[in-house]
Image (cartoon, rainbow over all chains, first blue to last red; front, side, top):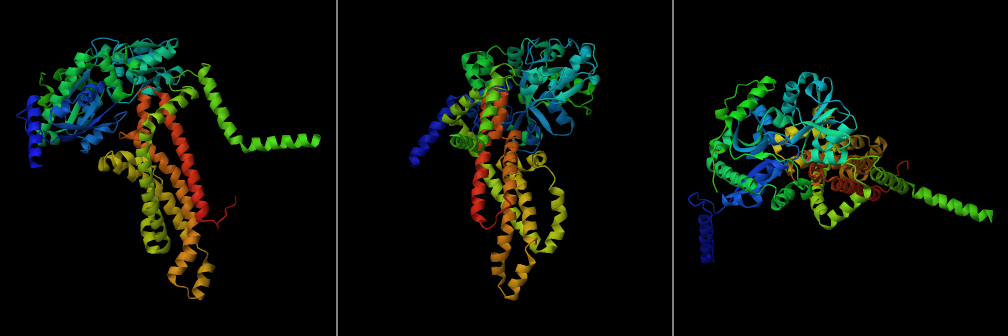
Length: 328
Length: 264
């Protein structure tokens, strides 16, 4: 009995040594962590990292709480319900500006250099909307106010001759946006994938993509990151390091396998989107590290749109793990 | 000759009126199917009923729907039982102990009109996103109708009965069991029935806002996965579940208060 247990422990140690994390220690028992996420394509590095066992290799057992919509994620992170949470950069900075003590611990994703990217501004073909100028006094659907989609749409309106203050933004969940557009309830909508492609398939004769405000106003601009509270980072530096490393491993896998059949299966497994629907949709750019300047650009943009008042120092917001190049 | 044909006609009419409810449902589903198939309504969110039924069968056979409904039923039953028990005890205490009632009634009256889903965000902060928060919010929902009804029932006991019982020097426990409880029970049960529907709604809503299991979560997940047939399949199951729970409740109610015949 004792002997077999010792043998088991020896076996474990050997396995850990083999997976090249020896010296990290204490990995015989997995540390449980809880991550708040959204079951969307953007979360691929995390979800695939878990299913591929990259987090186990780092001694972490991850319990994910996927919250569709994601509204409850940051409050739950602040309340200590999660150890880590996924968030779009705008909402995260907004929360930090309001005094929540978060730091970015890993990169998430960015937009492409140019469209098509992960979200497009759609309008009716006969609606006469081709620029921000045409949207004056019109209704534009966004999934949430004050988030990344909203601020990029507003920036696009102002850049294309319009005034975002004169556009009325309406909150509509992504799955219902194209319906709202087709039935004239809104004049335009910031629709993300896969709903954009599905909308064009069903209503290609009535709606079109006017522009790609995400990459259009900020090529390669930030979209999302993962955060933890300063308190948690201070108390658990080793767990944060392991998390970032495992996450980077997931990113590495995603970058190497994006678009393959195995990738489709892996993404379909947690999003429940049928694999064939994933084919051909525009994907986000998965980042290995955070580029501080891109966060600074977002802070500036948020100051311009007056949703952020606090002066934030980018360097203080980024934990070193989000800047580290891990290799596998 | 004419007589038989009339009776046949009458019988057909009677049969029709007995089944009119089911026939209406069938007609509405057919209309749904036709509107989706004919291209009258083109939307990813409006699949034909036949596709939904296929998805329903597939999801039941694969065991996925059972897995989805399990956690929902568990939370619902737990929250409901806690809520109605607390409601009955509090309502009864209020009715019998006027001091307690005067003390707590303002608080209850202030809290009662707040829609339970509005309490979810602050509750997430204190109770998290797991079962604790959900069961609490379900229990709070189930609590009020039962508490208010029990209070009314228990304070509305026919004074003559009590007077007669006292004249005969009946023991207090006997008065309680033979007069107060039987005359309060119909009110308690009416409250419980209102709570039943409300609690089921709140269970699903709480799962839609936060968490990773249950029918509410599944509904949102399937919407975001562009699989509306599966989403409707879950809604159909919810409808059936609600109807079943209500029918079961009515059956139990009839047995418990067999002497109490409402206007119907």
